[in-house]
Image 1 (tube, rainbow, N blue to C red):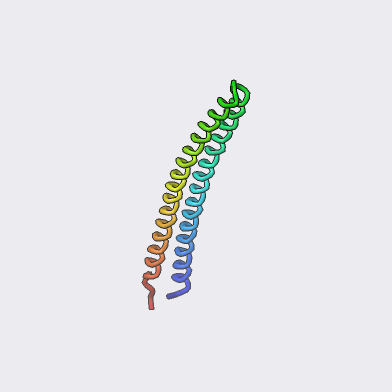
Image 2: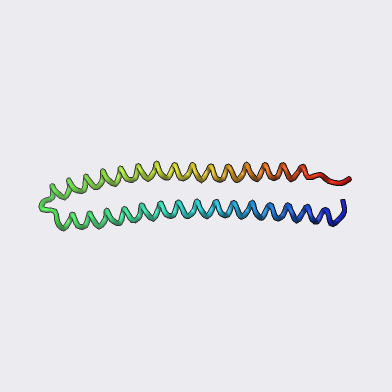
Length: 120
């Protein structure tokens, strides 16, 4: 194997590694975007509930009505948080699967690269 062959092999391996790292960066970016969007949705929901609570405080005719409405809100918030937890688990599983697929692909590519025939 001469210097030109070695340079060609090193260049090919470098290009493949750059592609792998770009794919990893893409996975990271998608995961970040999904989780950030989920968090923003939850924060928006909490803001809505806060406004609703303030409105209830000013419009309730009695303390009993106010407490009853707050209990209903607390139940709704609890249910929403359970839904969010389930959705977040699902998103985390999808992200995990994406990383696992990326890893398996990288290992398979590396194994294939190790089988590159070399001239003796």
